[in-house]
Length: 331
View 1 (spheres, rainbow, N blue to C red):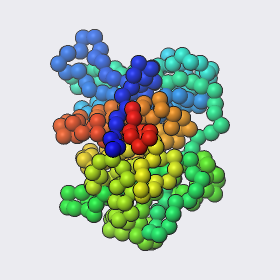
View 2 (tube, one colour; view 1 turned 120 degrees about the horizontal axis):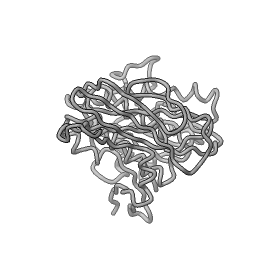
View 3 (cartoon, rainbow, N blue to C red; view 1 turned 90 degrees about the horizontal axis):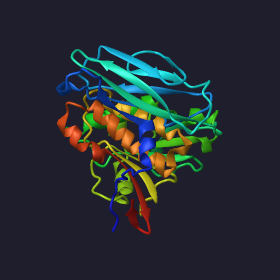
View 4 (cartoon, helix red, strand yellow; view 1 turned 180 degrees about the horizontal axis):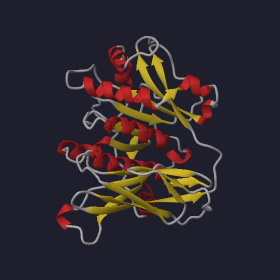
């Protein structure tokens, strides 16, 4: 019997986690009872020589940060506010991590957060994530680097429709059409994210139209092969090969958006964007990177959801990495 497992980082994860997500600490002299709950992260834990990386800081939606101040032990910073670019073009490859720190000043407290990255020799390239509709009766196209599915486990109710529409809107605005990408990039360097539909969509279909013409039967059949009672959604399932109806894939990333609040407005859209950033890395399917992604997304989502108690309790179940060996999930 299959059981879903959430990977827990061990001793070797400490350095990688530090490269992904920083945690807040109060500056000396700040009131201990008013420590600012912030998180910070880099787009990737490993950046190629000659490249740059995006850094982001996360504070509670109502914290009203007055000032963000970024510093680093190497390279150059450009931009201001909660998102900046860290240029490491002149930094040589080395196993030693480099650290960036953000100081966030709020009305009554100041805190800092640090994130680390490692500069490595440039690889041959990264993958780009595109979207495509999976029309009823059609099969997935072969040859892509990663297959993801935006799956809705049941027809929308009054309570779920808003979440469905928000997720599909993020899907439409956050990814380029795969057909346009194929004009310039071979399939092997592309990741594809499918949205099952009952019929061909009209040009510029709205999220509402896509919810109404979604292929719920196909989504339910695909979800039945996975552990758990997945009857809500949205869910994002990612695998190295197309999903099949009768068995779970040996490895898959499971993202559960079924209880994600629709407020703040940017929570779901950020989630989709962050997933795209991570899926673009060719190291994505190495186990250590997959574990780190799970922890990073949990932490940054939790920072966005501060002030939403129900969301805080659910974060651990929102993102997981599952492996199956011999028919049983293993950690």
